[in-house]
Image 1: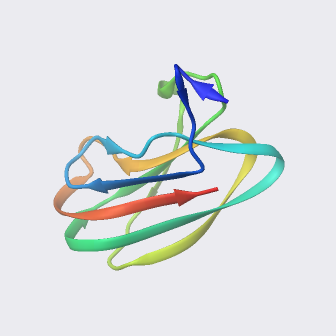
Image 2: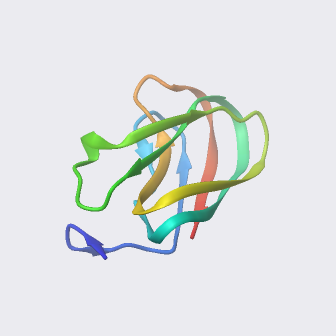
Image 3: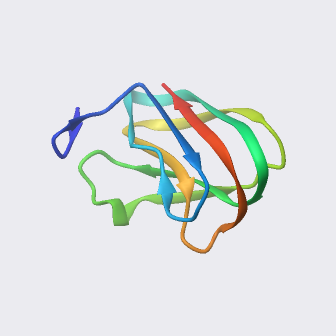
Length: 107
């Protein structure tokens, strides 16, 4: 599966230190429930809201569904998504206050 001209990875990671910063999209294959690992690490004075966005393959980014989350420390969450589709995680415009953190999604 590709989005644009890029192959989608099985792991995405990003350090978030401002609003409107996101991981790349990650592909969720198969029908039915799919489990992914969401890992939050390296929190350094972080204050803000992280948003998990899901989207069906081929849809425009503007059609993504948002699931806002807040974290006060390192975390590992299992995320379920009914596939197929795409996921990414980041900080929406207006949701950043201070600090930084590292986010990862693993298929």
